[in-house]
Amino acid sequence: MPVEECGNMLIMTAAIAKVEGNANYAKKHWPVLTTWVDYLKKEGFDPETQLCTDDFAGHLARNANLSVKAIMGIASYGYLAGLLGDPKTADEHTALAKSLAQKWMQLAGDGNRYNLCFDRKDTWSQKYNLVWDKLLETDIFPNRYFSEGSGRKRSEILSDATATLRPAVRQPQNLHQVGLDCVDGHLGQQSG
Image 1 (tube, rainbow, N blue to C red):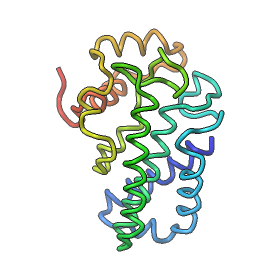
Image 2 (tube, one colour):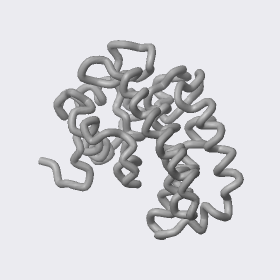
Image 3 (cartoon, rainbow, N blue to C red):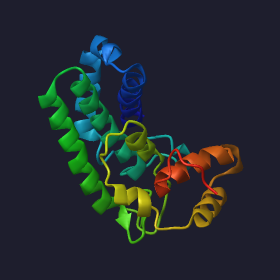
Image 4 (tube, helix red, strand yellow):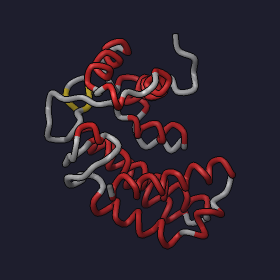
């Protein structure tokens, strides 16, 4: 799961920096973070066949949610570079992430929803990796995505998610709620 794990490490390092208010941890590990972001820049946007957190679907190529993970990994590196006082690297990676997000919305979009994979029209999956854009406050994806991103009512999303997932991989209702709040633009707000 190379794209998944490179993205995870960059995102989690950015989350540490956000919580601690500095990038000291990132500074200690900058060479390996750079290796991971270089990999994501080369292989992450349109990933080859591999497992990811969506392993219930098996090995997938062109996984749209995994692509979001790569985009957010690149954005995280830019965020960290900014905290480390390197505005050139910060701007370069933030601009790349924003550009890839626009391209992603075109490739993954299918009417009023976003597909599981770039080349699988008439599919749908929850884009839970977008939560990092809100939590890290990176503003990589346009706000309109979060307000209209699913193009579907919460009840439809929950119904599809419950019907699609095998019982062994069902998530507790509260995790669905966090993801739905992200999709609907209500992250951090009470929902009714």
